[in-house]
Length: 261
Image (cartoon, rainbow, N blue to C red; front, top):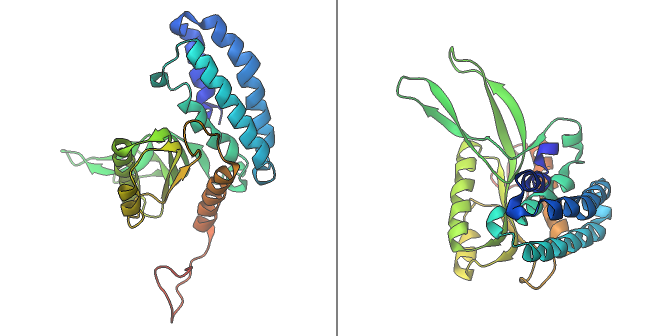
């Protein structure tokens, strides 16, 4: 679980590499600003639904400090200084979901199952993708006489963006399609601060099941994250986990494909 605190890792890597010759400043920021937020979010996210306003305020306060520190120390967006914290939010939110605490499912971001490929000599290899956040199940499979493969079957895959534009939207659609082709009942989402995708593309995506939902946390760059959107995102992901565990009977007469509607 510790490896999935990607903002923590990003900060520590910058400290070790003396990024921009700012090792001292980064160490002070890590100790005085990040660690208290990390500890507070871990505490608040033990019961996220009852603490959503406090969680959101904590996130907004830290993002403001991140922005000021980045500007003062010339830390570029390419360094993923801000975006890794947005990715890390999901690790706090979902670490206490019962199925994850019990070890039934896990939290991942590397080598998510995306299909099987037959090599020229007839051997089989596993295709994988990295995603920003994934809830899934790690299993082992054996094919013919090859050594067992360990794969991560996704239940939920989330791409996280500081903003989403048309080019990025095409990329996340392609990634989501690869995951769903390999695991049809997986659900795919985008969590972003702000949206820059045009209305026409959004309306078209509503009729395409490639991405289950796009969550926009802020109205614009000058706004703060809305607690209601963060809560909606949390509830959606928890429901996706619950849906996997439900016995889905076929009942006739009636609807067969969308019986819950």
